[in-house]
Length: 188
Image (cartoon, rainbow, N blue to C red; front, side, top):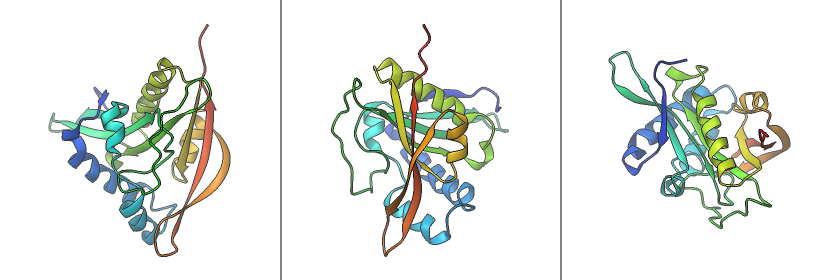
């Protein structure tokens, strides 16, 4: 695991770095699961920063110290108390209605890890922080629209596949994702 990882809420000042991180993450880490056309279309339409999560203070970044001893954003991800299951600011099918924690599942959203920090525990740290925060807000279930690249990771974290979905992007291109759910583990 990278040394001295710190999890904090993302701010508006992080948006330019997050845009770059998302593009790099998707192009490098998802290229084995999606075609270049799917990646390009997804980056234009569905993948990207969701400023609503930043406003809600539910979007997190993991900061690491790089080789030059500078703090860099190694990854990002969040949870939401709103209906939208996936999609950044460019996504046209947003649903900003608030969820009811007694009946609805919190949405786990927009996980992207910089390739230099992949498979080093960064996503686990972010996911743990998201689940803890959602549980503290009263949610007992979580759900997500996982990319094909993320399914194995989330399955290892006790998420269960509910259904395969195809997100319509543009020009007849679709992006296969998997709707996944998890029941919170409360400690007595």
